[in-house]
Image 1 (tube, rainbow, N blue to C red):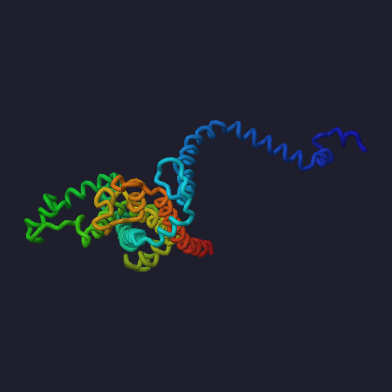
Image 2: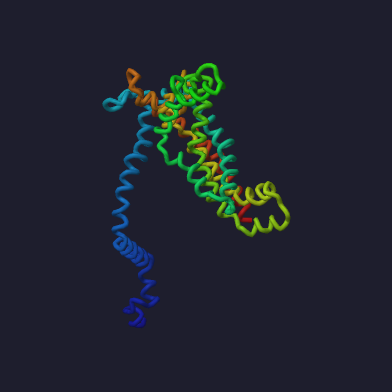
Length: 331
């Protein structure tokens, strides 16, 4: 054997003698070098990681654990009930009422807010429209306004005793007596749906405006040359191009609309007679409401877990649409 082949550490024969162990050592050394190079990056990730583990991951895991106990939130959970809380949740008419109302909020957001926001985005995307940036700002302002403040303000202006809306309607002869918009079972839910629509309209419009920037201008020019009307351009050019992004916007709107806790809590607290009770206020009532003589954290955790599973199922049902659209786009 040639001595050079044995002593030459960079030769193929010596490398073959090292085998997988040497390659693994080189990879480990590269990893250590990379970690030392980016050490400060990992340090800056520590606060976010701690917050995620403390306020996102741990509450999720703990809710599953607490849901198996009849626990009031004081001391360690000790009374094991297994799936008893889940059976009570699924047999509770109040739970299904809250779930139904949550779905109503979601349906209004998807079937009313989503298409109206698209139409408004198309209008405001026209470069020949004067003052379009001002209109965008005015429509978006409710989004950046705190929802609890919005709820309190609307509760004041819709108050049947001195509220400005009833005052104007009475003086104009539209009504003979004040309307209790938030205190009547027949009007409370439609009123909240209207407020929620007004509050979330701006962010959905911004989603559509961002999506409209992906439509090539050449397509609009070709449609104009072919003599297509504005309606035909919208239906035959804009919407087909936006379809993949539209499904993403649909998912975002759906997930946001299912949890209008702050608006409902600031206005009706789920009343009157649970006619505006949504899942978030239902869970809050059993876990934190001081009017309850004894909190039921275990039951509230079970309700949260069931609602989360339903949300996951409803979201996954929409995922095939997104995959299908992207597959068609790829072809």
